[in-house]
Amino acid sequence: MLIQPLPPIVSGRIRESNPASRTFQLPGQNPAAGSRGPASTAGLASLQTMLAIQEVSPGPVERRRQALRRGEEMLDELGRLQRAMLGDGDAAGCLERLQAVLADPAALAEEAGLDQVLVEIELRAAVEVAKRERRP
Image (cartoon, rainbow, N blue to C red; front, top):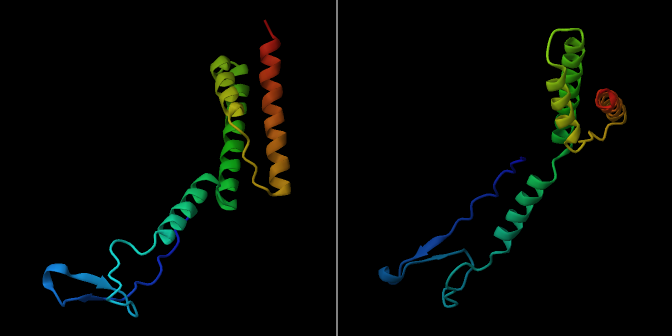
């Protein structure tokens, strides 16, 4: 999540004409207006909207990180599957984990070379899963 710096603090003063009804007053604000409650929630709403958008759509750095992590997971599982087929592990467990990685939606890094490599890794993983599923 990207964290943006806060805007500068607005200076103001507390009106002390009546200590029982102290109110905060911005510079240039008419004390006779007597606004009760927040003047505007537009700033708060726009901040919440920006935070929500940042949480929903990851930036290019996060997309690249997710794509690399997914590619590494697939390569790790393909390596485990290879060792399992040579007699050093559980091939069925490797296939299940490989299918779970493939079931996650593909995160593209939006870098031509990296995306091409990730597509080829995914294709190889899908071929291995399909070959094992066809065998009795």
